[in-house]
Length: 417
Image (cartoon, rainbow, N blue to C red; front, side, top):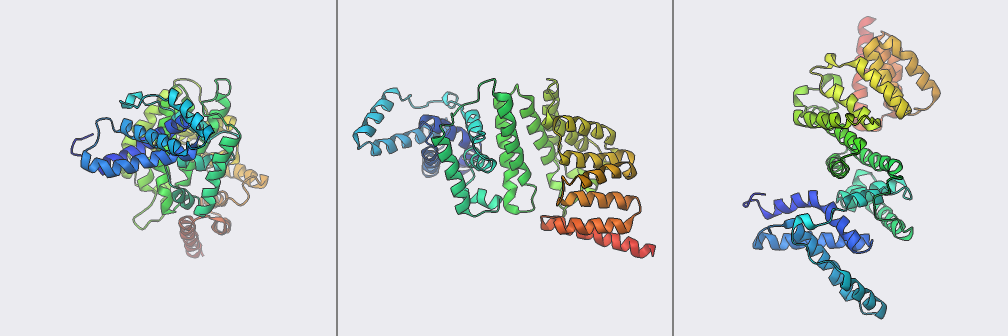
């Protein structure tokens, strides 16, 4: 870091990159006391904000913060050691306490243990997401509550119950043994991707989630370099994030992939994502996130929408259906099939999916059907599907997009008549 960089900027960067590492170290250090670990980490950053502007940024800032957090835990325990049992516990701990950290490289990196603890199968999905965002991403309870549209009190209770369950169920703070890893890693990846996908909402307070999810995915990919699905998830996020700037126009309205200004796409992220994906695929253990990343790469590397390799995308969705059978994959495949072979080929598959009832209430099923029917010249039926999609659309931005399409459909019908 530059010598003249303001202390506040250094601390902000360290909070983004080092929070989870300090919290993970402190959870191990305190014997699994999550609340104390987070309190001590927060106190360390507060001390840095008070002292570094005057004293200067230390040569090893992460070591300084971790030592400050450790010392805070020691102080808390010392003040609590008035009862005989606590005094004996303190004496036993003092005898085995490690020396203060002197270099960043000496700080144990226990973030991987923290990830698998946050995403332990004994916790429900809501708890896994909340713990991951609080402990790994460092979001406040208020930030997490706003992102998931619940009250701060509700989210606080959710996080508290999750921590209590970790403690009372004696959930181990560790990476699962090798024979359990294949079953446990997908849950971690799923939670991270769920967090990332929350950022697609038009709610402004959700925008930070994509950054945090990518940051945690980077940590996971770094700590598990031999797991191609961890690399695949990171590649997928980067390739999708590369298109972020083009998703909205100047008025804040949604822009579909076909009409996005590709000059706004982040070519550095596309290059990084495709390189990570290529390294993962060379391991020849393609899983759902690698296949989804390959689909995203087809879109991201096409110079123009009409240059998209739709037959390849159909083939990739066929692979994805074999490893991750679900109706959303089927829906996306029909879109690719319509682009590759025409809507008349894809419409029977889409109608069969609708008849199955597996996507009842999902607005994009009806919006997709409206698009197929429009391209086939069946405007009245297309308008009916658009009205159904409009009734089901979950966000204002999506409703406005569908309203524009419905108005265009009416215009075409009026001109035809």
